[in-house]
Image 1 (cartoon, rainbow, N blue to C red):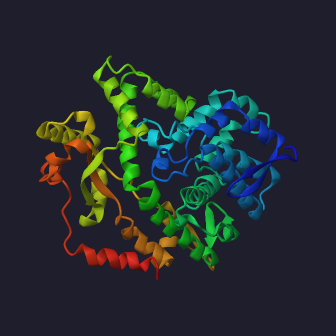
Image 2 (cartoon, rainbow, N blue to C red):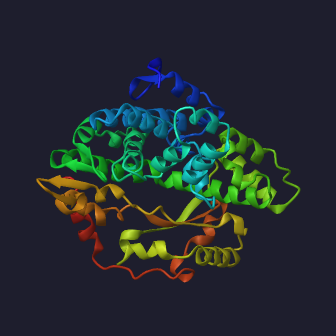
Image 3 (tube, helix red, strand yellow):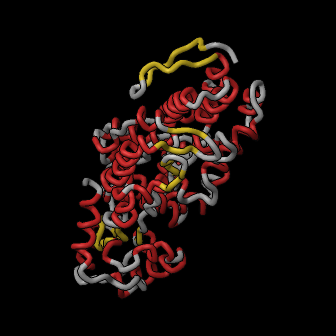
Length: 415
């Protein structure tokens, strides 16, 4: 691969060097499309500065991947392979990133593989690399996979720093250099004991970013509205869901704005929702139950989609509201895979949550902020004065005296 011939200025990492080949890949239509995909979906309606793109995140991930590859003393070929895999790792994201992905039947990693294998991008990639090798790394396979997609990978590191920077929320400030300096690559990325404190800070940062940004209560309403709208778009065959990787944010918004609202009930709903989003006329939450109120909060995530849809229908009929505008919203499961990061203590390996009391506390504390919510139009709020979700949905058993336990676990995060 040629020496670096160009620099691109990143607002987070500064000057990033690119080789001739990387410039060719970056300038392909498939990667340039990512400039028009918002990294955080509709979060700019909550944090006005959060207009950064998937493209910015991709080049930032490439930079951190290169930095980690240098530290691990990988060969030039492996380093360049990691850089290209990082640049391409989000190539299959549809409009508004994870917001639309939740409505699709496939994950963006599968669509990324399709972009790499089945578009003109493949012709460029095969000049230097085997596309299958890149796809495997993006999916976390092989010895280089954990660098891009693992428990403590450069993808997560970049988006935490970047999302914090653009939202203005200070929680995402993490010590990337210290984490990278204490990683070594065997079958997995293994963290030296000296890097545990930096890893703890990264996990606590993610824990705080979820309620503040990723799962902010208004963000969830915005996402829920758009996802319901997008389902109707697919039902009306306005867009083929299999081709989402070809569209950008503007494409999708324009198609929604230009539907003929008189053609069908679904079209009228699509037009109304996109108008509401344009004017920030949002649905309102009339019921919210935090998961930490339940004895076993994990059971909430076992509720089937059909059960939720049936409950929505019953609420709609009972309250006299259009079915489309009744949305029972489940939080994302607070997975935090970094807790499984392997840590080297002398000649033994332990999971991070086994040696860190802070990370162990996170296993329970991560259920402190998510809640199950019901969203309806604000003009119908008066109908829900005596509403109880338990009358429509079979919920897990409530826990007694949970308050003290929750705050004890949360306090451990900052010991």
